Length: 120
Ligand code: SF4
Image (tube, rainbow, N blue to C red; front, side, top):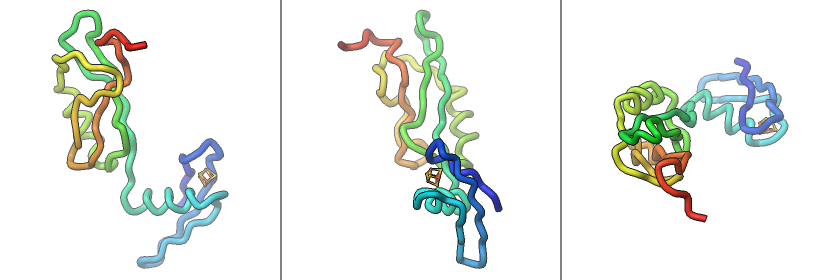
């Protein structure tokens, strides 16, 4: 199987060969490529960036993201959850709107301080 490593802008083209329990990776310019390929083959994860609705007129939608990666097969569930979510509390940039989503240890955090006056 061929993959492109997305860990850094080099975008190395990786070739992954699976033989039973053994996973062989070639094409990486650094060890991170092998780690990425093995994770991608065994437990793929992704960060999620989206928006949620709020009750506040001046900012009816707020950009949010996960502060880490969640299992790829949970992305649809998270998007569905966030689709029905309406924020009714003013929060700062970096503050969590949801904690430990799907027991992943990852929070969904605000990426904008539009609901609060930013501290300088
Ligand atoms: S293998 Fe290393 S150098 Fe190549 S894209 Fe991945 S992180 Fe970057």
